[in-house]
Image (cartoon, rainbow, N blue to C red; front, side, top):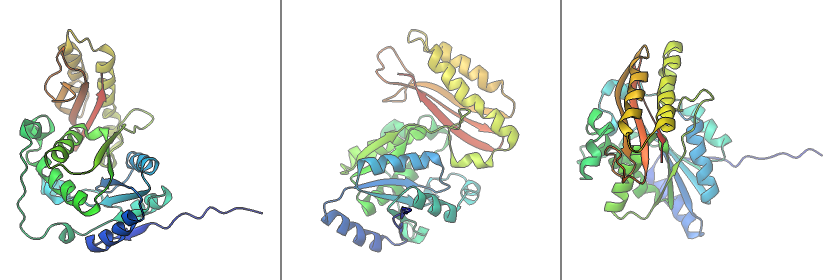
Length: 287
């Protein structure tokens, strides 16, 4: 006799009150919650975070919310992909328990002010090229943590600096959530998975491979006594690639994002570049 696997039904909430009511029942039953906050346009990278959440917690919550406060450019916000039907199907197939998909008015009430001083971390690397971006990230993640109250939240290593920023916020505000950083998911040719990749033309897609190649080259050739040599070689590789405009390539201390030095116990190489009209970021852990 054939056996049928019945997928659990994904529960979808659009209001915080209904979600909180449901999650309070989940907590009352002694179950733990794992949270994956996203802006949608889901790919295998997001689903790998969900897989980690399912392994480590009892009930998984994924939010899809394109957060307006973290976009410096309104045009970037307007063109951000929003394939909600396809995303919902992916979450259902991946065994996610809850989708929180609120409208903007559910998250932001009128003219709100937010600022959390996390020091220079906000202004280095990504912060220099996207001023105000991390205030918007912290604002929305703080709100989502407040709504979901997860035991653990799962983020991708691709947004390495973002993970550091959220960690700093959680520490400063003493929020009771464990943060988990999950490895980057890559295409077979090495390109880091990103919701922005759909904007790449065929030529852009080919040129974009230089980012991961330069990172892996820096990882392989890194000499703690001469960190600048690997950095310069990587910069040369990227600036020589057609259609690619380098914003930064850094070999940084993984705890401060200052340039790596002989005392750095954790070292990460990070890159940001425009390929065609699309801005991409990537990184590798060197040590």
